Amino acid sequence: MEKTLSIIKPDGVKKNIIGEVIKRFEQKDLKVVGMKMIQLSKEDAQNFYIVHKERPFYSSLTDFMSEGPVVIIVLAGEKAIMRLRDLMGATNPKSAAPGTIRADFASDVEHNIVHGSDSAESAAYEIPFFFSSLEIH
Ligand code: DAT
Ligand code: MG
Image 1 (tube, rainbow, N blue to C red):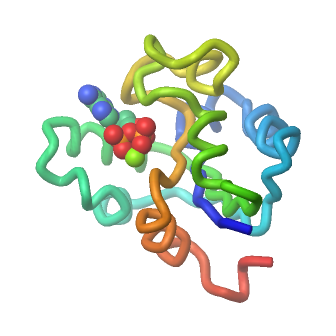
Image 2: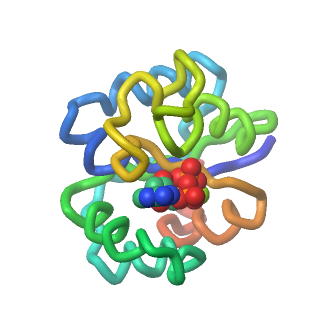
């Protein structure tokens, strides 16, 4: 059993597809083992995306991620990290495979509905960033 972190980003919450996204996780046997709805401060978003701090989109990405509430989810399952990435689709929805969350709902490369940890190392940083051990079931 592997754990990974997903975020339904502010655009996903605004589009009223929280349930749709979670349904896709559950249908593929990814189990919700932790969940909360919060609004990130700009500083929270900067710290969460610290690996991207030198990228040209860092400022606009962290503005977007702090503009409204998000749903933070810990998912558990066999190969959960890779399987979540498969369900999400490519970062840019123009390149995302048909039937993926980003192909179906994302507006552009920045407003792409969903986050997923990209490796075991990222998950090990991202899960405790938001959850204490008491909040993971
Ligand atoms: P992913 O979310 O697929 O793991 P990433 O880690 O490379 O992608 O980038 C994090 C987020 O930053 C991504 O979901 C949206 C934004 N982003 C990435 N590349 C971008 C670009 N070229 N222009 C604008 N935003 C970008
Ligand atoms: Mg990433």
